[in-house]
Length: 428
Ligand code: PMP
Image 1 (cartoon, protein in one colour):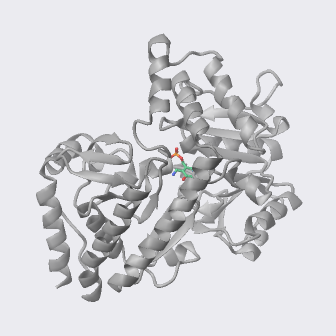
Image 2 (cartoon, helix red, strand yellow; image 1 turned 30 degrees about the vertical axis):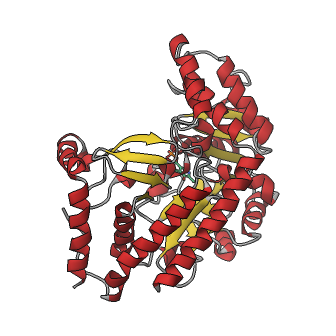
Image 3 (cartoon, protein in one colour; image 1 turned 180 degrees about the vertical axis):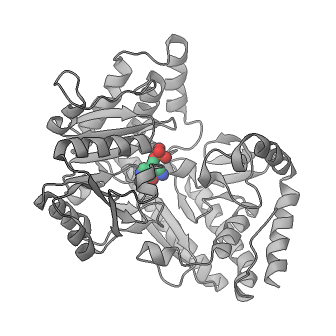
C-alpha cells in the first residue's frame, strides 16, 4: 500500500518533468551522481532549473515553483533583484577582479565593520566553508592550541575535520551546557557555534545558552567563534548584537554576497592582524577571487536593501507563515510542527517542535522525502530536508499560496503516513 502511494507520486513527478529526467542521465555521465553539491540531490532525480525571476523559479519542463529555498538562505532578495543586477552590470565592462585593493572592496568591508559590532576588521573568502577554515587557523595561531569544540548538528562547511570528526575536534550536543562546559578546557583553541542549528533542523538555542558557552570559552582562554553565515539575515546588526554576545571571530557568508560566492571572517584588529602582512602577521591568506569587484558590489547592494524594515517584515511574514503551515497541518490531521529562527523555518513531521538535532532527525527519511516531492508537485520549491526561508520579494499573496500548497501537500502525505512507514525508498 505505502509503496503504491509513493510510486503514484513519483509517477506524477516523472510525468511532469521528462526534460529534467532526460538531462539527469546526461549529468550522470559527466558528474558523479549528476551533481556538484550534495544537498542538491534528491530522488528520483532533481528538477533542472532554468530560470529564476523574483520569487519564482522555472524548470526545464516549464513548471513554475514558488522559491522558498532561495539557494539555502543566500538569496534574501530572490532572483534578479534589480539593485543587485544593476550593480553587477555596471562593473562587468570595466574589470571583474584585480590583484589589488579596489573601491568596491572598501565599500563592502566598511559596511560590515559599520554594521556588525564584532567586526573590527574583515577578510574575505569565496565561501562560508573557507571562512570557517580561516577562523580555525586564526584561532590556532592566536592560542597556540589545536582542539576545536563544535556542536552536533552544527554545520560550518565542507571541512574534513569538522565533517568527519577530526582527531582535534570535540563534538558536544547543542543546548547542553554541562557537557559543553566539560569539553571546553585549556587545550581548546576555539568553540564554534551557530546562533541556531541551521542545517541541523533550524533548532534555536535555548535562552542563555550561547552566552554561557561564550563565558565558558573565555574562562579557559579559548576563542568563541560565532558562525552567522545563515543568521545575518535575521537582524540588522547580527544575532550577536541582539543577544549581547561578544564573539572573538564572526564567520559570515550568504546574504553579504548578494547571490554571488562569498565568505568572510571578522574580529577585533588585534586578532585579525594575524593575517596582516603589514603588521607582521604569521598567517598568509590568499585567494585568486577574494574580494573580487563583482561580489563586493553585489554584496553591498544586497546589504543596503536588507535594512531594518526589510528584516522586520521578513521575520513577521515568517512568523505568520509558520502559523499558517501549522494550522494547515491541523486541518488535514497530520502531525507537523514548525521551528523558526527569524525568516528561516523547518517543517518537521513531529507532534511537537523538536528541541534537539537528534529529535529532528528521528523522522523516517521517506516521510521527509514524500513531503518534499508533494511540495514540488504543488508548486513549492523547498529544501529536501524540510527547511524553507523567505526572500523580501515573497509578498503576502504568494505566502498565502505557499500555505495553501503546504495544505495540499499534507493532504497528499496523509494516506502515506496512515499506511505506515514504507521500507522502500523512492527510486528512479
Ligand atoms: N556555516 C553555516 C552556518 C552554513 O549554513 C553554511 C552553508 N550552509 C556554511 C557555514 C558554509 O558556507 P558555504 O556553503 O558558503 O561554504
